[in-house]
Length: 223
Ligand code: ADP
Ligand code: ADP
Image (cartoon, rainbow, N blue to C red; front, top):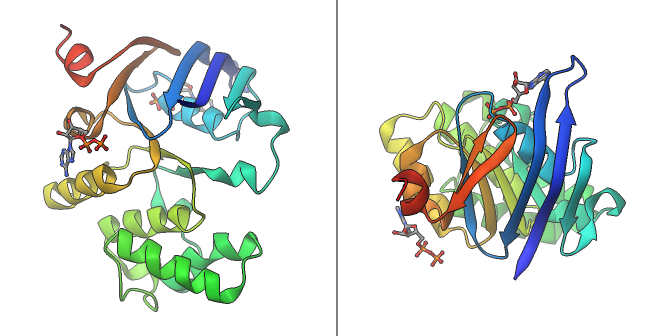
């Protein structure tokens, strides 16, 4: 069953650079779709478009409805993890950061607390509630940032380079973690091992288009 669809997406940055040149893509509910491709291919831009954060030409449909007409709280069902965790951590404690989204949603404090506890457990940061995000390791900050997204209860997770800048062990842990999150995921990366291990399908992005889409074996080994 389809949850997200991109139809003929086109986007040009204000400086004139054409980042998306007609992207068509369908994402099935529950699948992990990994987008690979060289630097500058348009992967990050595509994730922003799928999150509804860019004014693109074409249409993004979430559960059959145009994203541009979608309001909170349904819009919040799409959660995005930026490449730099520091873009998502700005409070004095991990607890405050992970509670921020659920509080914005107007949830009662008891439910906020439940969600923070669950999200931190999910990313392996139970007990980090009162720590300062700025004193965590990079790998911990990446997972804390992921917890700030998970606490909103997204139905689609969009992740930009989730394994970048991690040491081998943290990278492996993050791969395993993504494999364990049952939520639909669209992951942009140039980590081919990540694509191989966690993807149900792999899309190859090249010069602003999805040029090849198939099983990890088909796309990565070009069978
Ligand atoms: P990828 O994530 O695959 O590396 P991006 O989506 O970041 O690709 O970039 C696609 C194209 O858009 C590239 O040519 C890049 O230089 C350009 N681009 C990305 N971000 C900006 C920006 N903020 N302003 C102008 N051009 C940008
Ligand atoms: P589903 O979410 O549909 O049950 P799985 O997660 O079982 O799918 O498997 C999807 C792909 O990810 C398979 O190729 C599997 O080998 C791989 N995979 C699953 N879990 C892990 C993990 N913890 N580490 C690495 N690869 C994994």
